[in-house]
Length: 122
Ligand code: AMP
Ligand code: ZN
Image 1 (tube, protein in one colour):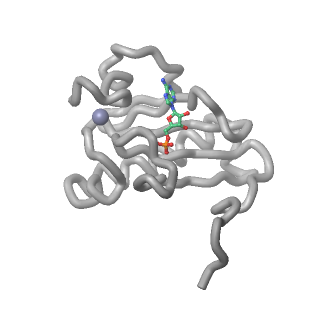
Image 2: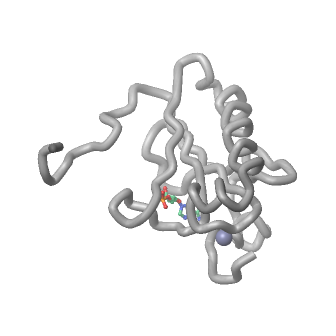
């Protein structure tokens, strides 16, 4: 637990969130600023700054995030219609909370994967 980490504080129950799933290793809650009709954030209880660090420190917990995502997708009614799972990693990806988290987005057609690019791909 990191006292100045927003998601550690949600996991600890110090900051309210609408929790949709809670397991020994994972907590999932609605994103406060949803970017799709269904937008759930899944976080490991363990603090790691991003997904790659979590993979190195606790690969089983990384797998737990995906298992939990499948359960959330079913519970939210998007398992059959499809959904997107993504990790923003670092500044250029737009990561704002440096506690690893998996976004689950669905509930309607989603836009392009990477959005607008400032430069053409090489
Ligand atoms: P990222 O930009 O990938 O770091 O994602 C962080 C996400 O956390 C954003 O989509 C925010 O809208 C979301 N968020 C920030 N504060 C809260 C909060 N208190 N409860 C739920 N979601 C939050
Ligand atoms: Zn944290």
